Length: 159
Image 1 (cartoon, rainbow, N blue to C red):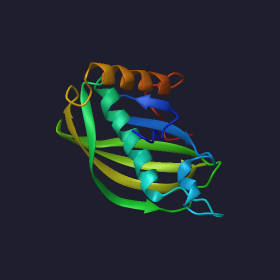
Image 2 (tube, one colour):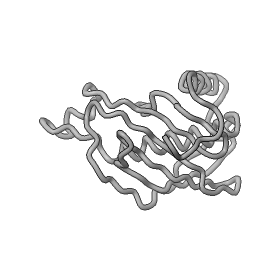
Image 3 (cartoon, rainbow, N blue to C red):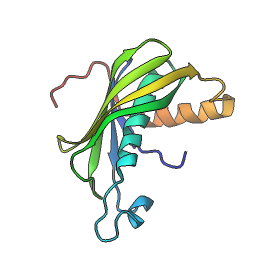
Image 4 (cartoon, rainbow, N blue to C red):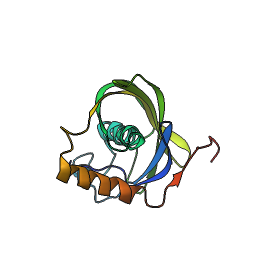
């Protein structure tokens, strides 16, 4: 994957909720053309942040035995531009699942201000075809690194 858009996982409550962090750096290559003199993080990459957090929530909740694939984005809203120096809090909550599908509500905040939100739908598959042994180990190491300082357990709605 070219863009890993989560720097770390701050909070993780298995099968319920995950909060990830992304610090937006001026050196991100997408700022070169989006937009010269007025850098703004593209909305598609904000959706990708939520999708990566949703994927992490679903896959980590099943100990990497599943692969979550984004299949639908509903009601995506972009409320405030994201600029270099912003720290994104990417909050995803599992709304429903039936084993083959999962719906996740995603919200991105900067300093407790909502900048984007969307409802994401994922299809759920066996991980083996997507994560053969070497890839599985790399994905596990990546998630382990992101989870290094995470708080594991229930997440309250108060900061």
